Image 1 (cartoon, one colour):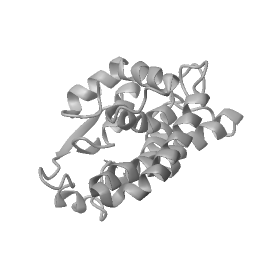
Image 2: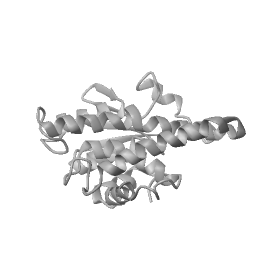
Image 3: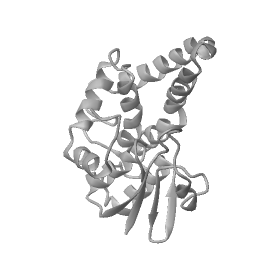
Length: 208
């Protein structure tokens, strides 16, 4: 049985969504953030040395990193769904988007969240961070123009991996200037599989 080691209010929520889209049976092992530090509990270290979520275990194999988990689940359990055929031109585009989510898009948002805690001490960094956020969000917004999903008319694992970026942007009120991203977020958060994953996953601050 596939087990999702699920931390509340974390990127592991999108793994639950993917599994619901694919109707793959799974179990949830829950972990709670420290109420003061908001850090993951030490119990997660027993699953993976970094003590981070998401992590899955499946038939004795442990997989971590969101992109790797999504790729693994789709290849092992997707039955040809949620990704283009390997070797196709569409797959190369898909693969870039899959890795873009954590490889590039999250960095300025993480800086925004952490530097914001520094108060006036972080003020000199704000213009550069905001510029990078605008650069990346503009790129995604333009890429979504005239299409429902990143690759066109079909939802893929790339949409699921990048979804957290839009959700964080929405939580901080930064989607108003990006209508295509805003519509995309509303579209995926309305999906039945997404809503079911929310019910199963528990409290999640980034859902509307």
